[in-house]
Amino acid sequence: MQDNPLFSANWALTSVVFLCLVIAAFFWSFERRHASTKVITLIATMAALAGVGRVPFAMIPGVQPTTFLVMITGYVFGSRAGFMVGALAALVSNFFLGQGPWTPWQMFTWGMSGFTAALLAGKDKKFKRRSFIILAAFWGYLFGWIMNIWHWVGFIYPLTWETFLATYLASFPFDTLHAVGNATFSLLFGKTFYNILERFRKKCSVTLSDLHSMDRSK
Amino acid sequence: MLAYKQQKKLFHSLRCEVALCYIASLILLSLLFSHPLFLLALFMALNMVILSAGIALEWLSYLKFSLLLIFLITLVNSLFVRAGATILFRGPHLPIIGTIRVTLESLCFSAGMGIRLLVILGAFCLFTYAVSPDKVLKILGGRGSKTMLALSLSLRLFPLLVDDFARITEAQRCRGVSFQTRNRRQRFEKYIPILNTLLLSSLERSFQLAESLQSRGFGIAKRSSYREELWRPRDVLVLLSTVPGIALGVALALNGWAGYRYYPSLQPIEGLEMMMSAFLGLFFIFPALLNWGWEKWQFLRLKI
Image (cartoon, rainbow over all chains, first blue to last red; front, side):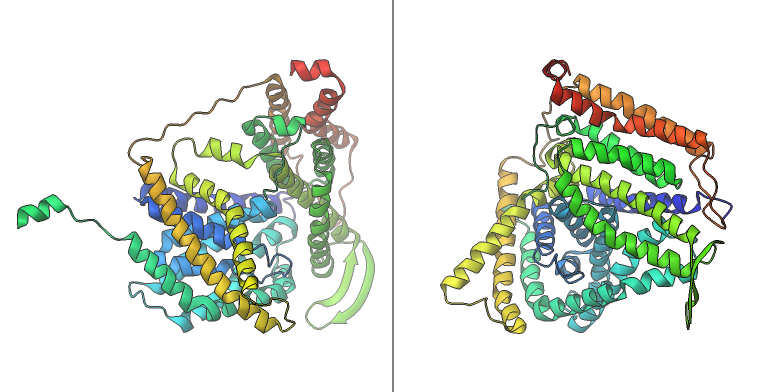
């Protein structure tokens, strides 16, 4: 490993390229599928709202309603919408808070939190409050763990289990704050936000019957 | 509210593609190189460009933030990496970590990686504060992409939602709700109806937005777009320095110049490496030099 001085640099580059490809694949999938104008504007609104949520809490590392908002959107509107809201929220909010090497990682991580929330919802769209809170708290840690990867592969050498654990231990307090924040937001707002979003989801899926064909059938 | 502010500086007036090419080249090279000299050359060049773009204060906030990250990099590398041969400090034996051994090589590696981090952060700082997001979105969303439409809408809605939040909070205050209470829980609870109202009003607005888009014929046919931006001599000049710069960087990396052996002992630095790194830096310092001439000579400003 030490014979190759490019070892860590290559991993840093590879991880970023891989991440960008995954994000691009999700965007491509969103492009290919039909999405009504209402769904597009709703995704944009939820992404902006999730991004705005970062601003008042920017001074408290870890505590922010963004993950919760992304997850609840994914839970109600499905995996694609969940990923899109998460990815766009990260990108948009960083236009105001400052872009950085963390942007693609945040896009991926928040996107995946929305994606997994949709998987939790499954076909039965009832709000599973306890499971949602547990998943949200888990994402508090998972968010930090994924974000740590760029730090570890990009700036630590050699890449050993010891340095890996040390990097992850350093972020543990922030991850815990994030997890507690997510659980609290889910507990306080989960059911209410679910009901509101569910109502709007039904509004999105309203279809208009063809009046002429109805007349003919009479 | 956007971090980007229009300024009468050369970098701000570049075509978006050219600015992005310059920034992407720096990020790519910083990831390719682990040699501290080359990273330092890129860092120096980038610093000059940032200063010439008039975003020194913003860069300072990035630098403050990077201190924490560099501290973490140094901490992990010094305490956990045992590959270095030159021991500077030998500490006590700790249960999990073992004997603490701070080596010169691990400190140098941390410094090198710190510079790499600064180059990457500097490039992103330039992107945030000197490249207009509107121009970026125009390039990406020209073909009517749904993703880019959602992104543009989000970007427009962001300040609107911040205003909404302030407006709803003000309305609650007028109704006698006090947000000054010292009890954090009580204060938090008072924000709950605000957030609910904010969500509801935002979603209602999103539907109005959708109806407005539909009434303007969105989605019926392929979207037409009009974008006319001139290729000016300044764009060509910056591109003519960036492209050979990235080509040189990649060629150096392919020929084994990008790496540097930190462990077990530091690789000696040769004169040729110093020369090549300075040469590479020259390509990337060019926008700063051009900006200097642009500001100094009216004639040059008119010509480019």
